[in-house]
Image (cartoon, rainbow, N blue to C red; front, side, top):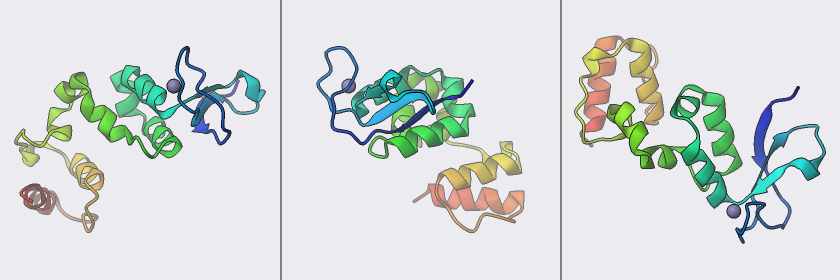
Length: 141
Ligand SMILES: [Zn+2]
C-alpha cells in the first residue's frame, strides 16, 4: 500500500473542508489512487491540520516537515511549530530565543543540526569547541 502524501494542487476548486470557502492549494492522498479520492484543502486548513499533528511526528520526521514545507511554502512549518506552546515547552531552547542555551551540553551532531537550522554556513568540520563558539556568537545578533 502506498504512503499518504501531501502535494501541490494546481486546479481552481474550493477546499474540501466542510463550510470552508478557501481555494484548494494542496492534495492529501496516496499517489496512484484516483484523484477524486484525494482530499484537496486550502493553506489555512493545512495549517490547522499541521497544528493537530502529534509533536513527535513533526519533529522527528524530517520527511514530513519537508513535504509540508514543499507543498505550501507560504506557511512555513517552522512558524506553525513556533506557534504551538506544547512544542515550545518540549523544545523551548530550540525554538525560542529568550531561553539561554548552554551549547556545551550538546553533542557535536546536535550542534551541527542547530547551526544548519539557523541557516549558518561554515560549520562543517568544526570541533565541538568551535561549534559552541560559532553558535554563541551568532545568537548575540
Ligand atoms: Zn479550507
